[in-house]
Length: 146
Image (cartoon, rainbow, N blue to C red; front, side, top):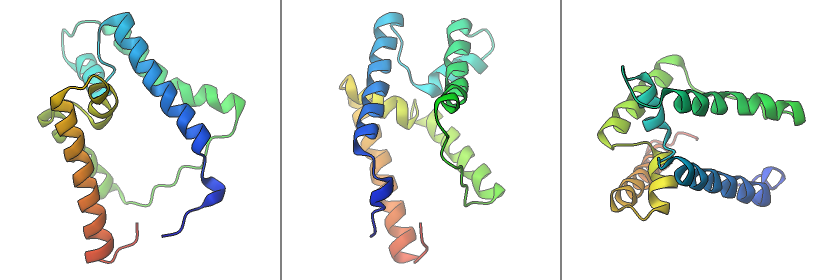
């Protein structure tokens, strides 16, 4: 394994993680709601869902934040090394899994684990174990580069 030390940014990564945690905490304290994107987006897309205004503002913030960041600095290049059928299949699997798992990886991992939710702890362990197993199979058993 090779580490690209030029792209290794522990302090900015730590600051970014702290900002994500702080924003999730402030969102919970201010609104009494969990900042899991699947719940926010699911409530926005369901007919007659409650809290449409804050949900729209939340999603707009996610979309507009990189555009505002671009005013201060260049965005990293976007590189997608997959074809459309694979991306569509992966998106469908994520969507289905989000419904069955009662939340997405970020909702369980950031918001649930920080609240010591047993369901989120188990879900996050399952996500991580699945990721480890997938990398092992693809990289070591199938020999494909990641």
